[in-house]
Length: 397
Length: 144
Ligand SMILES: [Zn+2]
Image (cartoon, rainbow over all chains, first blue to last red):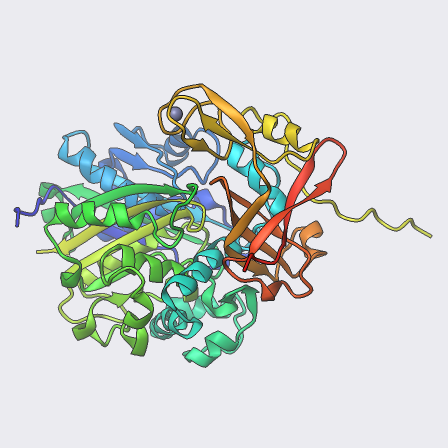
């Protein structure tokens, strides 16, 4: 095993607490407010930031807009915009830029008012777009939920996966959400009915949105945002909190190919790169922060990342294996309550980093005792047609 | 009395999109088309101006038989788009054409779309519009 690099660490985090800002706060304001809190968490100041990473949700010419809005003149700007996986890319790029000596303190921010704007992210139809793929597909009335449902359907066909097995993802995540006051508040503010731990029956008896995916297998649509501060090793060691090192990363794309396998995601490419760079095996991971847009997303990604074999995910997740209080059985899944039950304003990737850091600092509401290694895996775009994957392996000393 | 509103319309492809316009022009004559590279034989779909295997520009248009099988599908039960909301529930599917291209479309003609199955044999059924036709698919009984 090669020596793990200690180039850069996450030193500051903040998750914007409100999931319903009632139209009173803008995405840019959420980004700025979160930046201030994450820098305070690190014990760093505004003037320390010399690199900005931004997914462009503020619109326009992303890198310029955000620098001016913040009132910063960074040496490094990275506006990689790959949906929900953007923040895993940003973390990887920040580490690379810091290791290259181009930056010392990197700031990642996210803000969204998807809920206040009543964006029908999951079930809205798309108009004919400028991209050729859109021009070939939007006549069909495909929805985002159906896109993922088509992966689930094929997974069931090839491997015998059942809705009850997929429901394990939802019930484990909800159990974690019920332990997280911010997640419970989120479900209250978003007017979830009957907020409690769910059973497998609850999930499979909930309303079908797009066969075979039920309501309780779909993420929420919230407002929200957050910030992450990443610093060079010497800066990190002087910060307020235990440094959470970025040990390895991987990036990949996947898109529709004639004759391709829809059940295998880009994680099958990004995961091995990340694990190899970190010198870590999936079996060593304590915390799996895996993008849970839908139940099937997690199942496919767990397989592709190597936690179990392809097609074995259904049996592997049975019996509550993913809960935080079952560490002997493998990693705990989405211990903040996930996009399913805590926070999904459209691009959830930043929360994967934030909760992984909480766990490695020992600050989670569903703390895994002695957690040392985590993976944050973002999936941006759409699992069933075209998406990007960003895998980041995190560890503490 | 106010007039009753026009029924919502299916969103149609643009005939101005550079890579896919030719595909849609060919649908006027109810031709379901794809491209094949003259240099390396790669099938290219969705249509482009370059071969995705060798980056050459010697792509030839071919006409598919319109026959294929359902690779996977979903039955949509919730949509906020006015046209599609009026059609609920409906089936969307990735269909593998017998020549190789994989196309996204709707499978129509089932009393209950939930009875659709992966592997179902389908064939194209055209929905004509003014400037183009939309390739929908309907089940055909599979050869024994
Ligand atoms: Zn070629």
